[in-house]
Length: 114
Figure 1 (cartoon, rainbow, N blue to C red):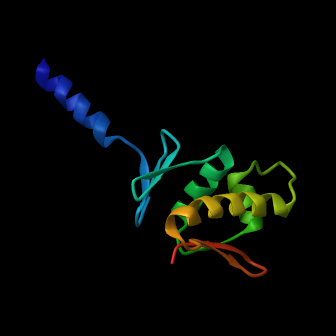
Figure 2: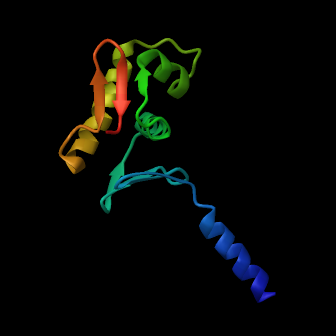
């Protein structure tokens, strides 16, 4: 009986859902972003944006695509709403990395990663 309990415990440990990029670890279950052992607390949309950026590293993401994928497709919001959320996220990341990891691509959108 102990053997089964140990296997379940190990399975639960391995079942943790995370996304990694360099020194970043985004915990999907707890909504915590760790960067170099620093915890960064993200608001809901910041978390959703970070998750989407981490799933699309090196891909230019247009504002329209971000609205469709991160926000509800049926909602109307101005593109500066995205700019504000990205700016907040960028500021939090820059306090740790000391550089922008989210780049603005003029007239196109955003690029995450190097």
